[in-house]
Length: 246
Ligand SMILES: [Zn+2]
Image (cartoon, rainbow, N blue to C red; front, side, top):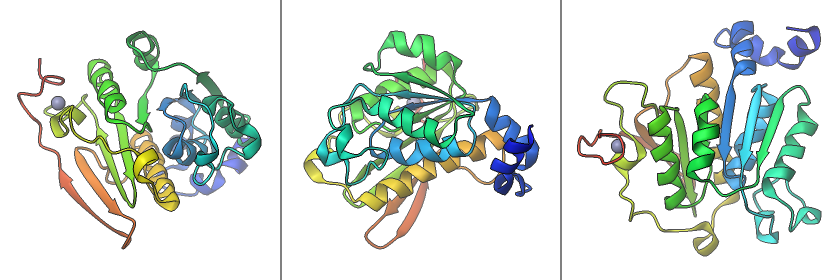
């Protein structure tokens, strides 16, 4: 590792849990972030600044005025532009030593089969149940660890799935396809909450790659922004699940 890199990442390298070995692991991984809205805006800059070697950003959406309350990589002059592209520029300005790839397309089977297979971790930063189930389906198929989250009003959820482990549950073991139809555009979302949960997703990524701490693996971490409290419960594997048991 070069001197400039040692200096840039020194506050992480000082941590015994990361050290130079952990920092080098971060540089070697590819992380796919699907969704460049609130959670993506919170999560991606932390991962870029922390030195994740390759970040792939995927979103077919464009920036709107109503995004600016919580999506800080965007300004009013970016309205109408690609979220993935502007977020990529924001990340590159903050760390030019990492690789960033942009996909401005809607997620598809072809996308997963060509892209997900080459990723170490996928982060679900989407805002709807349909996308979450699709991402889950393909991450189960490729056995790619999935850091999933959702935010609505003052409540957030964080979940980590890793089908490389025996008897591990998947997202579909917990949520039926018909559940979770609330949207931020119709119900609102508290700006600080998006950043707390997005930062928690980034934290889970770094911990998983470097192998320290206790992860949210196989659990739901429920966070309530109204009283700054959280609780967690275990996700039971559904042995009749149509996605992970076949
Ligand atoms: Zn399942």
